[in-house]
Length: 450
Image (tube, rainbow, N blue to C red):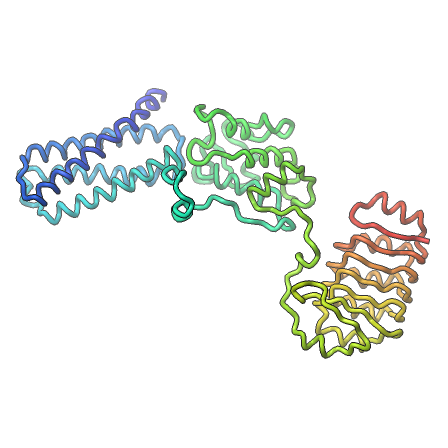
């Protein structure tokens, strides 16, 4: 096997011979045709034969070096196909130029074959260059406007942090770019398939590539961080695994048990946040409530049709999409709440204190799907009202002081999806219950207590 590797490495040395002879042969014939100068046929035929013979030798050495398995199969396949095709047409070009067949090889056929050879030379060289130097070698130092036209962007898809899955969205994309071309279901170098989490953990000929107890000693990490001159360095071709990608992989192995969880459920250190921001443009800054909600602009005529002696309505965002609604009278009715239904999804703040709100009215308020802040203090609402309000998935602030709620509502409030603060002064909930709750809970804070 080592002899094959040794001989194969002469491929880059010999590869320039067929290129030079093919171009020389085409130039000689073109010069002869353009300037009507007769050139000794033996010189032409010898040049074509040398081009063909050196193509054969180069192809053989190329097939040997391909056996090392150090190249991405997609690029290798294309380079191999175009290279063998070039060898074949080199033979045809030489054979048909022999004196006994020269009458069959018209000038138009020569032009066609020469054109095909130039195209094949270009394509073979292109894919060969990609194998040895990477796809961006020619334009690494080109002006940005040229680079943007030529270089295929190798960025990951930008993600919204709330929906990010640790393995599926952060780790598998790295493997897809750097590993899966050689480690997949069809082609599993080293019997390792990296196209999914479950297949990765099955391992390969060298064992399981993950070492949870010491991530840096994982076979995966060792292979991508060893010297590029090492035979087992990965990936052997193309863009290496970046520093940010390596940091992300080590962080993932440390949190291997949470691979299928959402990113927001994990504690992410600042340096890992920086890497994830670089790779995926993730924004770890907590969004304002109005940034989280996607909604069309309100029809202002709907607002104008509401009696301003009953409700005070104000816009609370620069884009005039969200509303603050305050009830101005003492006894709110079902019909009053019904008048708000046409603008219900635009109501972000709603205030109706000391207005005799009942459970029936609470049902109407629970339809305000984008409600963020609700102030219904000094009303005769109870634990049943809190159950009804549980459907408000965007609610962050709830003021229910001086109401009839009891300690039963504490467990209900815990189930609110985004609730951050609840004011419970003047209720039957005691201060000690509030303190105990706040010691145990980080997400929601109760404020007050009797």
